[in-house]
Image 1 (cartoon, rainbow over the protein chains, first blue to last red):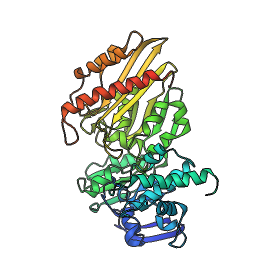
Image 2: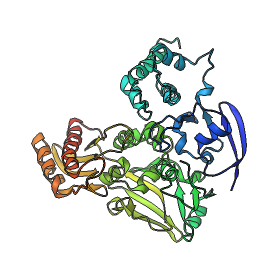
Image 3: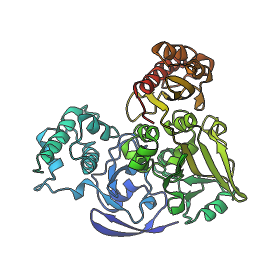
Image 4: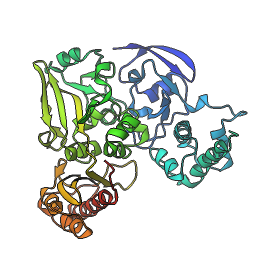
Length: 160
Length: 288
């Protein structure tokens, strides 16, 4: 059984044919659309490396089937910035050395961006809660929290 | 891994869902938000021939507040319980939702899905039981209502029968004279809880007139702990009463040991979580 799928990915309309119902959103993004920032770690909704934004809300794309996001707006890290023009959150991760192996980073960045959409100056506790669904196995949480706080502090000053 | 192949059905109305769910000759699962079901399908622990996707049924979504209840349609995303209208009507429900999964799963996971799973450590299940909530189940010959006290039957087993579908969950609101507390132990924020405790105390002046305490992780299903509740009723609630209530937990709980915690550890954690939930209730003046 195949199905046609319409959705908005990183600001562009996407229409795909031949999508099997069992196709996970993560597989669709990686294999059909080449968006390999979507990392598959545990494939059971624990590690959060596959986190993407669906209609602006963070979701674990390994436990979302592609047909469940028909018509939705999906964003991956590829939509944020380019190598030469990093998104402020990406720049903050770089400034704070919040990347070690990098596997969790795309999910962390998207969870952080979503948090700051909701709360412009979150507390450290709120930051830790927002990334509690994203595991970092390099145990680098401190610089990650620092990076998100850097953005929160600069937006509090009104210059981000 | 990826799910095994299945046939997809995407009904648009509740009537279509009821008709489809009643076809019991096909190995079928109902897909709500999928935050439990899809991991199980990824691992191929669940391999249905047919999946009924409920996400297109708009009449199954939404929250309304009546004088007595927060009425939540089954497909409402858990994240929506963080809405200001829920905070106003049921601060307890709003608060507890923060502990359900993580923000990355509450965006997809549904209230009905979580309740229909019936996990002993499901925060919404334990809260519904403490609140004495009600559930609406639909089937071809019409709806029926189930009291939360009769809903949880056994490990991951509820009173929803074959061919029936959970359509609505009613969380009663609390009056101004109620105090509540919540506590749970998780080793990591992304883990399942080991023990969950929800305590609701009704007061007339300084005297506690009714106590409803529900706990998860201490039996196959969420349970009320009647002996502990009795210790709290009939007068003001002081720290000594809290400790006496915790000491009587043993009469109503029978935890099993598993990979996450031994039975003895669960007993000890149950006691400490109940104490914390009760202290939270007593430290609030009128949080209801």
